[in-house]
Length: 284
Image (cartoon, rainbow, N blue to C red; front, side, top):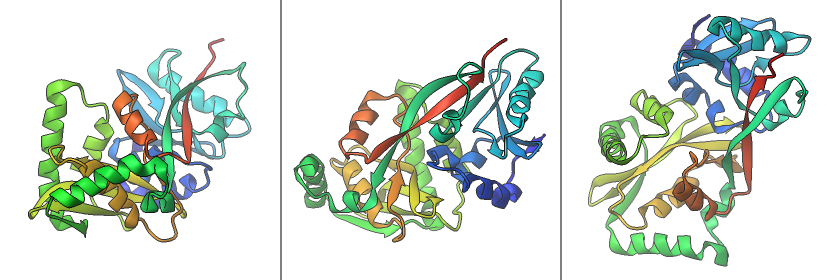
């Protein structure tokens, strides 16, 4: 078992591309930001995380887990933990549908919100009236500019991010720690893209994305200064305009079990909600 590093990027991305209906967390920079351990069992690659003293698989096994490999993989974290604990997190629907329910317990978790890019750019139809109103308010009341994100923007974006983090910590625990870790160690991978929003020359919002698959992108992180009314809707709509041309779908991640975030994501009318699952071996 060894630390996952940037050196394994090509190998892990090749394995990830073999999966159908990939989840938000399957984007390699997101995986890398979680400081995982890497190992191999037969022809299967596993990524392990340690939480509250126990080892678990951060994602389902990657590669070939047939011919008894799956059972060996489940036994591995159990051996590390010295007990019957050990789960596979962030599993896809296509993975769990092939599991024997008598041998494995399957828990449905939150789902990723998937959107059609063209629909989010155009915002046509009455169902998007509320969003268009917010966007028009922002355009009317603020002296704004929209620019592609560059590494030169990092310090200002980091300052905005820290302001958001301080406010969150002052009220409720931050639920998306992996986002915080990702941004603190941010480097632009070749497939990453994004935008900054400035009002009167000051960065008040930024949104960064990357390619999850050839025709699917994700929004990795988005932060705004909430004192600007309509900015959230405005930056989301602008972000879709910068998504690569060959992309049809955008994965905007889950709602962190937050009712307000769920309501916000739903008003954009997702094309689908892609479920993910936690799998454990049934104790004999």
